[in-house]
Structure formats: structure tokens, C-alpha cells
Image (cartoon, rainbow, N blue to C red; front, side):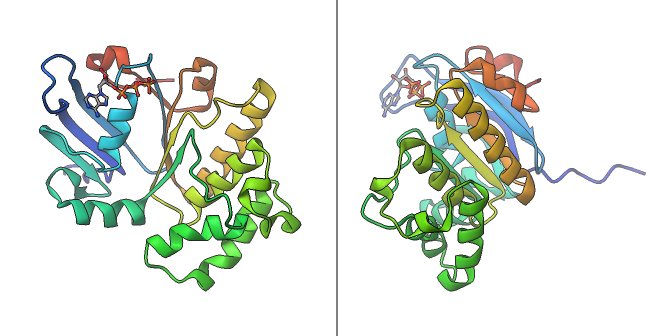
Length: 231
Ligand SMILES: Nc1ncnc2c1ncn2[C@@H]1O[C@H](COP(=O)(O)OP(=O)(O)OP(=O)(O)O)[C@@H](O)[C@H]1O
């Protein structure tokens, strides 16, 4: 009897990408498979291709060769509009710049993802409020404009927004770079606790190797041929 094939959240095979017109640098990754709830730490120096990899994983760009499956969907051969839909439904993102809308309230910033994914706002309101509270943002803050919050508070709003719809995958690009060590560790614990609660797989990019301890898997952008290593 053969084993049932595993259902990966991300399943990537022989991925190759080159920027148009560029004859030098190219990204080559032999393989990457992550199951639900498995977390990957990606480290690499400036220019090593971290942003390029995240753009491929989220379907913003497509590979020249290879396969990239997200939740059993072939991202490498979907149209741009189907990739946009899949991204809105399956992926939460947190970037270093956070991308909150400064004049919107905290809760409305979080609820934006429900609107983009075509889901009912009212059905998401209770979860948005609970998530914010669990992340340490008390109810009196939920109606304040995002611009009035500290950077640490804004990072928690960005995490709540990324996790609102319980995405299969959370992509985080250097979200802790503005934090000191204590706040960085508190942020990691909150983010991973909420991701685990939803069974969300996390791919987290940072220069800071001290964060590797929080993850199951490790990928070094400067040694991609080695593939993923256990932490
Ligand atoms: N839009 C683009 N067009 C052409 N080349 C690009 C483009 N964006 C990035 N590159 C090149 O691709 C390579 C990888 O860049 P990328 O931004 O993915 O690196 P990174 O690891 O995210 O860097 P950083 O940590 O500085 O953000 C670099 O050689 C860069 O010059």
C-alpha cells in the first residue's frame, strides 16, 4: 500500500527566476515543501533575493521555470487575476513598512482584508476585535486612527490584519526590524501563537539570525542549493 500524498501549503519544485534584461543574478531554488502549521525562517544579505522570493511565493511575479503550488493550486500557470484572488484568500502579509492606512481606524484597517477577499465585513468584526485584544490592543484603541499608534502597536495591527481570515500562509518581511530585543521577542511570540491558533504556515524573512530559534525550518538565501534545513 502506498502512502497518501502529503497536502502541502507550499510546494515548490526547481524554481528559477531572472529579472527581465538581467544577465547576471538569478534565483534558483531546487525545492521547498511546507505543511500546515510549519514555520520557515529565511535569512539573507541585502541583494540575495529575499524580496524576489516573497514576490514569487505570493504570486506577484511568476517563475521562468519550475512549479509553485499554493494550497494545491498551480500558481506558476494561473493568470494574474486568478493569482490575485488566490493571494487575497490564502495569504496574509506583513511588510516592514506595515502599509496601514493612517487615517482609517485600527479596526477598519484590519477589516480591509475581508473587503479585498470579497467577504462580509460584519461577519469578520467580532474576530477582528478579539484578535486585536489578544494582541494586547485594548478596545479603546480599536476606533483610533492608525497614525496615532506607536510603531509597536501598529505592528500588532498589521499582524491582526494579516491573520484575520485565518490564511493558509503568512508572509512576513522584516516586521521586527524597528524593535529592540525584548519587544522583538514579545512580537514573535504573539505572532506565532496567533498563527498556530489558525494552523497558519509562516514564512518569515529577516537578517536577524537570533530569530531562527522560533522556527521549524531554515533557508539561507546564499546557500539555496542546500535547500531547507531543520532548525
Ligand atoms: N525590479 C527589479 N529589476 C531588476 N533587478 C532587480 C529588481 N528588483 C531586484 N532586482 C535585483 O535582484 C536581486 C535580488 O534583489 P532582492 O530585492 O530580491 O534582494 P533582497 O535580499 O530582498 O535585498 P534587501 O535585503 O536589500 O531588500 C538583486 O541583484 C537586485 O539588484
